[in-house]
Image 1 (cartoon, rainbow, N blue to C red):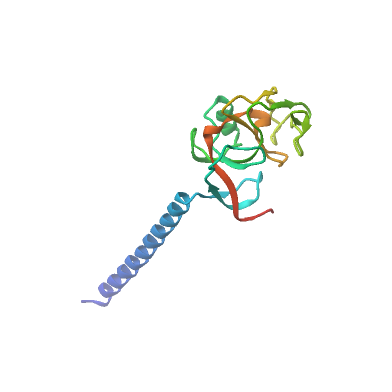
Image 2 (spheres, rainbow, N blue to C red):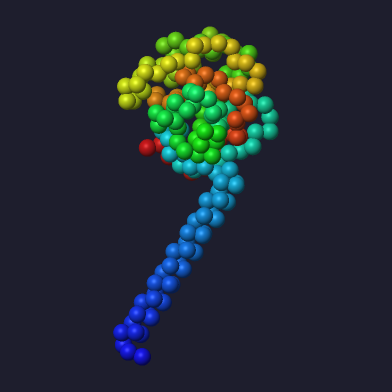
Length: 188
């Protein structure tokens, strides 16, 4: 055996060891992600709510006003347009979008009025002014107001640039995954 052949074998063994370590690390990462997803954990990277780790907590009662929820938006024309404009991130919900974290501000039978701000049953919703254009100058069309029908909720986020029911209207309760619970978050 020559010195060159031994070096090549040693390098090959080192490469195999490095490849093995990388594969084990990737497997551990995939298992951790799978376990987190199965346990209802999600990472929020949008400014609508604090950034960080959140948990989906099962909702074992009817949804109520002021509930902070994870919800899959319906696969509607408005949501496809929102996805095309970059308002929605990729995820596992219908239309391949990520679930939203929003606060329920109106439920069945409540009247929502959209003007310069949002009013529910005549009361102004805090931090609900309407934007006429998005951050890129594209026009935004507000929801035309109305009474929330059975099986639907109206969602809101106090973040000024949030895309919520002010623009896409009420959404089906069937899309609610559960309550949104902060685990490890921060506000930049």
